[in-house]
Length: 204
Image (cartoon, rainbow, N blue to C red; front, side, top):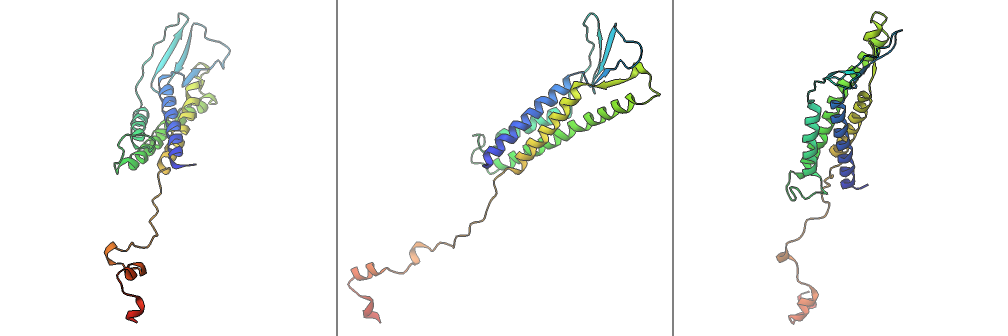
């Protein structure tokens, strides 16, 4: 597979990772109330995100509070750098920094994927530990929400795409051709000698 195809594949995976990270950030379903006890709450259901707490009432009203995550911003910057640096685009064509921009975009996607993976893993661990902790009341137990699964997939896509962009640059191989001879220093050919009226045997 050619290097520009690897760059395009890496950018596509990184862009999917960015979209998934944004969606996982916005969604409130990081934790959701688990009906593990004998009573089921019918008046309100509780869902929590890493940066938001939501209460769903029977009237369908959501009370949310959200923050933008650093991973989303970094992935957006990485996407911009990758667009400029990829060889299949005309941005900064002929510039010596074009290839390094693609590599920088790849590194940005990898770091953004790690920044997304850290809170998702921490949240999943907290849900599992609290769910199986007998000291936690049944009404305070949560299950893993859909946003956590999306966060894992998005971080994997971001890191895979970033890795392809980072390592998919052109490999510069030094030329092994012998040095060229200047045009003015070559010996006269036999044809040029014969045309001048002298033969090679005259000098031997």
